[in-house]
Amino acid sequence: MDGLKVTMIDDTPSAQVVKTANAEHVVVGGGHSITLRKPGVLAQFKVVEMLGANAAVNSVFMGMVFPILYVTAIDGEPVPRCTTRNELDALIQRLDEDGVAAVMNGVQEHFGNPDPEKDAAAVKN
Image (cartoon, rainbow, N blue to C red; front, side, top):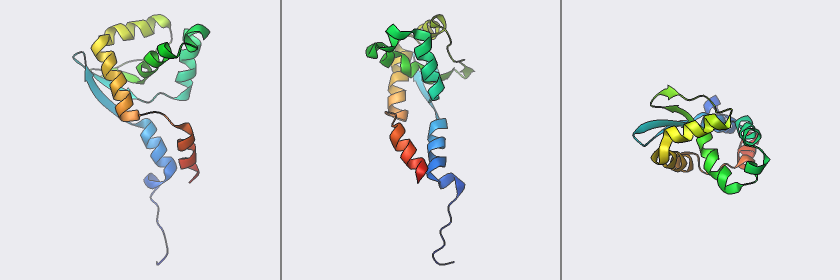
């Protein structure tokens, strides 16, 4: 079998992109274990719709809110996706300052800066 290259499904570039996108990481902050998972693109659009145009153009505010979308569980208890501003505010209050800081640091550490062009190029290979 000289020259034959065997590629396992899990080794393909597209499988790696999917695996990275589905990865979960747990951070600790404010006395809580907080599970993070990258939100889908629809969740990003929904938060802009939920918060309205004024908030969407405020890059500082969106930079503070966006990492909160990664929270999927607190202390093992699932956290439903926020669909209203009141739900978002309640989640932020529940996380408190230390929890929000842990979320922001965890998103940066484990997910880095998203690069959709890089992901698209990897899938093509």
